[in-house]
Image (cartoon, rainbow, N blue to C red; front, side, top):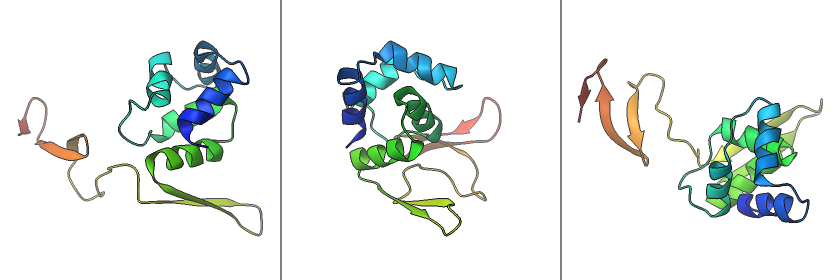
Length: 128
């Protein structure tokens, strides 16, 4: 099931309003708005949701974070693999990486839509 369908299922079949989802996320310490949930349902977001959003959705939907991550992977074409080790530990991998995160030795860059738009050289100065 993809992420919009999972949210719709909880909303329509389980009878949980977007407002209730927002409250569930807030009760778990996550800040998710009604418009953010709506944007996911109507596929108005362009990129893979960030981890804090996925954990917030898991709390809002009362689903395991891996279920929400797998649904997001299906929505955005990202393969998500979960494996359990002999001691019950859980590991997962994501291919391709869904977030555009600079390498640790690269300077931080402002990113917009996956492209570099400038390098910050301090307060008030960017090379554009």
